[in-house]
Amino acid sequence: MSEPTRRDFLKTTSVATLGAGVLSSLSSGAYAAGEDTVRIGLVGCGGRGTGACAQALKSPGRVRLIAMGDVFRDQLDGSLRNVEKAVENDDSAEISVAEETKFTGFDAYKQVIDSGVDVVILATPPGFRPMMLEYAVEKGVHVFMEKPVATDAPGVRQVLAAAKKAKEKGLKIGVGLQRHHQAPYQEFVGRIHDGEFGDVRALRVYWNGGGVWDPRRTRDQVKSEMEYQLRNWYYYTWLCGDHICEQHIHNLDVGNWVMSKDGWQFPVKANGMGGREVRKDPKYGEIFDHHAVEYTYADGTVMMSQCRHIRNCWNSVTEHVHTTKGIVDFGGRRGGYGATLFSGEDIPYKGKSPDPYQVEHDDLFTAIREGKDYSEAEYGAMSTMTAILGRMCTYSGKEITMKDALERGIGIMPTDFSWDAKLPNAPDANGVYAVAVPGVTEVLEKA
Ligand SMILES: NC(=O)c1ccc[n+]([C@@H]2O[C@H](COP(=O)([O-])OP(=O)(O)OC[C@H]3O[C@@H](n4cnc5c(N)ncnc54)[C@H](O)[C@@H]3O)[C@@H](O)[C@H]2O)c1
Image (cartoon, rainbow, N blue to C red; front, top):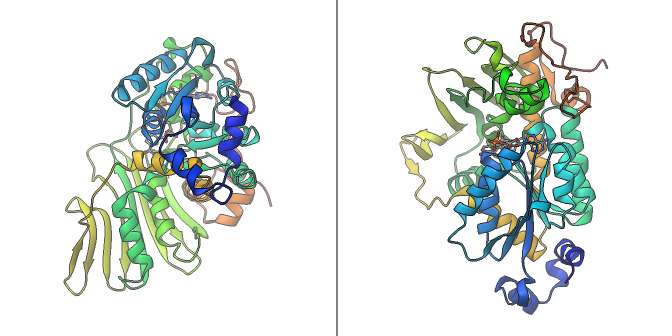
């Protein structure tokens, strides 16, 4: 079977159009000569891309990695070595990345997507996600993309539009918000939705920790401002979204999920405060080191959110749901998950905890093989937007509605992606970046 035909098969076959025999032969690997092989490509060969690639290769059935792309060749080579190591004992994982299908530079994503893959894994810094998703959908390729899926409102709108088009084309999209595939979350969000703990009254969500890696390159180790920001992408808002977007999205997304008993719900407004209290050195770019945001949902329920990147403080990466009967804790409950009711009843999570990073790939690849509807892009986009709304509030000091944020949020992406591009957020002559100032910084286009 030629490559495009194979991809078309994966793209258009639905359970309804397949006979049971064909389905069972697919899942049992009875297709001769590797015809049931799903071909994948990786864009963004860093830590998570490498992990996601290995997990995709280990998903049920035969999977072959055929192309890789990164702006930097050193990243690609390191990732390939690590993927090879990660799947060396897995018979159904194949790696066949020739020199001709190793792509570098800003167009590497197009070359990977055009190389005959059925599925592309998008794991670059999130600023690039919307344009890469849009291209994959245009080319009829299924997608696994890491969270967050954008860093500004125009990017979120672009993802929502691509998600709509993907559905029309029967393409499947997975998003790396793995708590949706994590057994204790599935069980306790389900039990909240079933009403076992009464009505939801309020939520608290946290990603408070010491921060991530220190800048990976100094100025004298790079050739341009673009390379400097890309190597140290976490500290630049157009690339990372600030840490409220890059990490805290996981916790905000759980809040949204809990509130979505009868269809997806996202906050309708927010206000917050934040700043750069400790991590002030210009080598830390332009992002804040703390944000605290109060989100309000349509029914008046409030979600209090905190995220911090400051060492030697109280740490917590957890979500807590206050209900009329007690509190449900996702983490932070003697280290675990469960409910503590006002009646005195204690309900710990007792089930198994398979690795959610593996399960999310098993679920996506099974949907692709079986032609089942599968789209995590819409809630992934709106949970990303929830985080961006919070950042817009902490940067501006204003209360902002989700509607205004989504429709009028100022775009922060550069338009020129080249090594000598003039970046809109370039530093001053002393290498100091402009940092948002609450009460001064504008985040909305004029109405
Ligand atoms: N779901 C999770 O729990 C989880 C955990 C870690 C990271 N992530 C997400 O994965 C993504 C990547 O994070 P990471 O920790 O792997 O970062 P990383 O820095 O290790 O890797 C990013 C890679 O992307 C490459 N890159 C940058 N711009 C590119 C472009 N335009 N085209 C091609 N390649 C490009 C970089 O060179 C680098 O190799 C982020 O969105 C992050 O939020 C998710």
